[in-house]
Length: 218
Image (cartoon, rainbow, N blue to C red; front, side, top):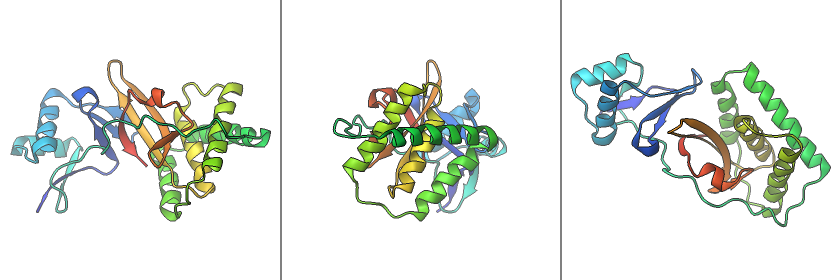
């Protein structure tokens, strides 16, 4: 069976029924013209597109012919979970809080110096090479609380990606296999990122993630 797949580096989702793409190589979110949007929607929904639409999508760098895929697939989960890691019984030392602040600063600098694709690939490589550690509520609560306290000392506003990358990095070092989730919403357009462990959010308020439709999971 043959069909079409997304070009490497692209992912998409449908917040509020509108198709939004993420190109991690170009570090940008974008939509299509009405004509290309209709052609892509037909392909994504029904696995079929007319010849003219298919050629136009290939020329636009959205899809490529594939022998292993029938149609492009969106990021699988429609909505993020509504539960977070319980922090009430957690303890974070000054060293833990300092580590959270330092890691966030390191990843903020990395985002300025290196492309988005490179930073995401670094997390993906480490995750694929790690073995899942049995969840330790105490360890997760300690790390999550460290980030919560760090945000009180130095605002994490508009730093969700650096915060998420740094948190995922720490969790990987601790032996966990976190999911780094990038999401978007429309009207107005906004992007957000957060970290999950076994489907539960850590380092963020679940209410902050609720409006966002996941567009890529690392």
